[in-house]
Amino acid sequence: SLLKDDFSHSADSAPSDHGSMLQDYSTDFARLRAVAEAKVRALRESAGGSKWAEDARAAERALEAMESTRRQVQVQLRLELSGSAGGVKQEWDQRLQEWAREVASFRGELEAFKRTTGAGLCGSLDDASRAGRKGAMRSTELLERSTQQLEEAARQALETEEVSQGVMSDLAAQRDVISSMRTNMRTIG
Image (cartoon, rainbow, N blue to C red; front, side):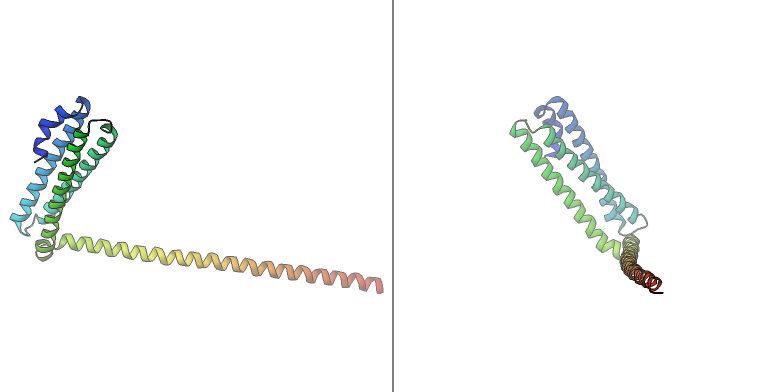
C-alpha cells in the first residue's frame, strides 16, 4: 500500500533532489517486486518442471536485489533526511518496514516451494547446495588439519632449537674444561 503511494508522495514530501533519488529506488523496488511475483507465480505453475530451478534462482536474485534496494534507501534516509521533518522520515520508515515484510513474505513462499516442490521433484538446486556445502566442509577440515600440522611442526622446530642450544652450551662447557685441562697438563709437564 505504501509502495503504491511512492509516486505521489516522494516528490511532494522530500526535497526535489532527494525525492528523485528516493523515487528511483521506489521504481526499482516496484520493478523487482514484479519480477519476484512473476517468478514465484511461475514456480507455482511449473510445480517442479524443467525450468523450476532456473525460476527459483531468478526469484532469489530478485529478492536479494529488493533487499539491497531497501538497505540503500535506509542509508540514504540516514544521510539525507536526518535533518528533515519527522513526517517524511516516518513515512519512509513505514515504507521500508513494508518492503521488509514483502521481501520476507516472498522469501518464505520461495523457501516453502523449495522444501516441497524442489525437494520432491527437482532436487537439483538442493543437491547442488548440499554438494557445495560438503565440498566446503571438506576443504575447511583439510585446512584445519594442515594448520594443526604446521603448528605442530613449528612447535617441534622450537623444541629442536632449544635442545640444540642446550647441546651447544654443554659442548662449549666441555671445550672449556678440555682447554683448561690441556693448559694444566702443559704447566705440569
